[in-house]
Image (cartoon, rainbow, N blue to C red):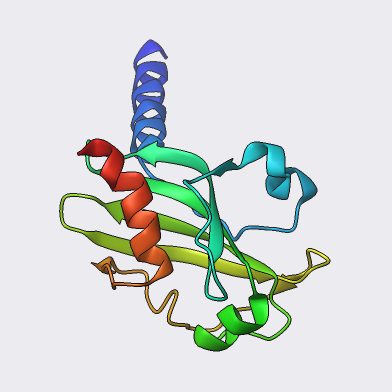
Length: 157
């Protein structure tokens, strides 16, 4: 009986430790607690102008010295201009994405992205210039991902 208990305890331990290192990414919801501004920190100063935006982060998780995962909220200064430039729905007020930033290789990947209207209702986003795949891609000059990369990685230099 003791042997059976020890074997079961060992198997349970393997299951727990194999799941502990995995990051679970769920779609962001319009849950008031998740979206509450007090849980988000502004990343640097807002980008000015009609193509400008403000970035906010939540739950920055370092995977290594130069690799990070985090939730990012992007709030455009002028949603109409921003949405048109990035092929986003007209009624989008802001979007939230789960991103991975590799400072060493100058890569950013968006694993999840959801848009929201001014009432906080979710807007389903198709592939856009902001998130075309889950793979890490080179940072493009002038993009939201470039600003995110600079704000997260320039601190390390």
